[in-house]
Amino acid sequence: MATSPTQAVSLPEALERPSLSPAQLFEITRAREEALSRLLMAFVTTGLIFMVFPGTFLGVWNLLQISGRESVASISPAWRQAHGHAQVFGWVGSFILGIGFYSIPKMRGGVTSSFAAAWACWATWTTGAALRWVANVYLWEWRILLPVSAFLELAAFLIFFRGVSQHRSEGSDKQKLDPWIWVVISASMGLLLVLLTNLAGCFYVALRGATPAFPHLFDQRYLALMAWGFLVPFVWGFSAKWMTVFLGLRPLRSKWLLAAVAVNLTGLGLTVAGVGSVGLWLFVVGAGTAIAALGMFEPSENEAKIRGVHSTFPFFVRMAYAWLLVAAVLGVAANRWDTSGGIWGASRHALTVGFVSVMILSVGQRILPAFAGMRMLWSTKLMFVGLTFVTLGCTLRVSCEVVAYQGYAAWAWSVLPISALCELAGLTVYAINILGTFILERSHAQERACDPWDSSGTFSKGIGRFGRMY
Ligand code: HEM
Image (tube, rainbow, N blue to C red; front, side):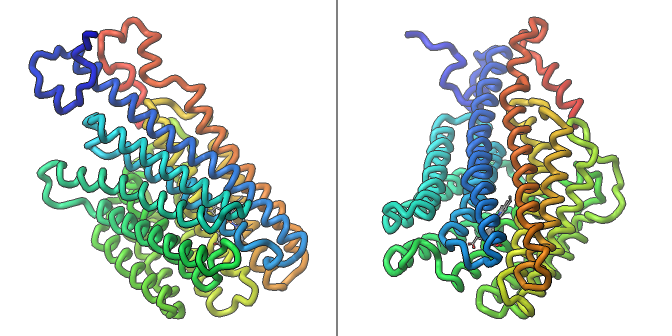
């Protein structure tokens, strides 16, 4: 069977072939963009499924149990950890891998083997995260499933890392990497360390534990590594890349950002080594320095880019950074006054919900529609509603968790279920808006197919759409 000149040809190969017409080149570019968007949508959809069901529903269930019995000790540590793992690995991790693959130039070259590796990464990561949840919640064959799931997650990351490092060596001749790339590299190293620690923990528990839950002290340090070694630097790195433009901020103070990363890593080292009394203070200093480096609370120099998203987008991004400071300060307070796990829990959720989730809800709705075939966001109103619910839920949760768990006031127990339902509503609305964008909004390719004037192979529509958004 004869193959068309546009089939099975990567973009670099195509550029080497003078025999290809502009229309054929365009066709190759279009096919590659569609393949990339499909891959991204698979990672994002999987992440959303993890976020809503194994992640948030289980979190809400746990909180309802805790509030009903007025004791955090009343829930199974394995269920608590199943929730945390589904959120951080199943949701946030899937998003990071998907966006990472989308942005790798090697992938943009359309080499078939790199697409195969990316799909293998998706399957391995998803299976690993799902097995962990099943093992922790149903206790089915957990002594086997736990190490297997940790192996699969590590393997998926190594596939991803191979793609990223090839990107570096095959990249342009640019000698110096931008500062934001260094920050993302440090976050990737943090993720690798988290996955290795997770593997070690899973082996330990499988061989010695009575349940699939990590022992308390190990879990506390593992969570510090996950939060401050992986999640926080990732958000800083992507903020340094996008926020200056999106929010119209003053140019990045690169040296300050690198200093913030160094201070944060020192704090992490001390905290993991058991010197939290100093390490936790360094998280506050690191967060403050990163905020100053980004100029997050300084007046914007240019107009914010809010086309295609809700006009409150810059407000929510800034608020996420305020939550980062709250999380760091609560960490210091927890080290000094926590007697119940409540101040630690409040600090953790100020970080995971207030900082990380609000950032993902804000920036995700800004960039994902464009990455997924130059779509428009389905509803800017839903974006606002989702962010408002998450913020309200997080405010009630963080304040009342301290008051209730510490035994300062009994009324706060009755507010916690409301906070959980607000967070659940906000995150579900977000998932609906992204899925609505993927399913109901037409991609650039679909628009072209419906527009005979655009079938000549021009980018007119796409440029028009980007013009509206950027
Ligand atoms: C509807 C929203 C959420 C609810 C109701 C919820 C609820 C809970 C509850 C009840 C716990 C047990 C410890 C405590 O009382 O603080 C917990 C722990 C945790 N949550 Fe959430 N959560 C939510 C969202 C999230 C999100 C979005 C993330 C991450 C992106 C996250 C990450 C974690 C982690 C890492 C733990 C610690 C697990 C461990 O002990 O190993 N949570 N959550």
